[in-house]
Length: 192
Image 1 (tube, rainbow, N blue to C red):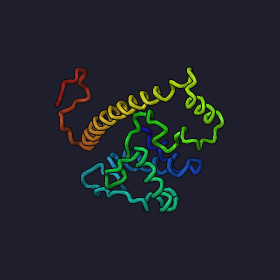
Image 2: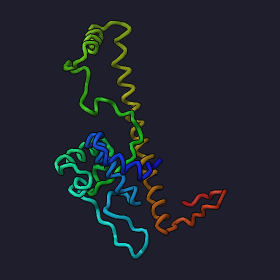
Image 3: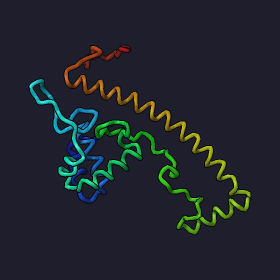
Image 4: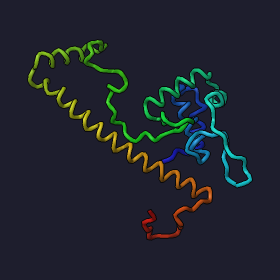
């Protein structure tokens, strides 16, 4: 579900949000709000409108009132966490489909011994001692991580298919009806 432009605009300008969130909201606003796959500096509704250009990090920083180096750090973080397409040359937002990614992906391995939590250190001690009700945690976590990886791969496939659907929807909104779609048709037919 797309977030309304008014909401994205309000959120991206709200200094209460951390820079990473404001940058993400701004990129989504300048991409999807402008009917585009990546952040651009305008919208083309008619043939007479100028072709939008890719939005730069510097321009985004100026728009949000955030220094360019902070925007750059935010973009790197958003690419690392799969909110932006790391293989795209421009600022291309992605739908974050699955929250199932393990905390290990973010550098917080609680078995490292460096945990600040006394409970987690105690739990790890019990696991290392082989205490019966607790020793099953590591194999269960491994199984969960395996299933999460499978889910992540499925989520990526779904994301790609949905991105194609969004691309076709945007083309339709721009007047390119590639599949002869009719909105009043109550009995949709397979088009591809």
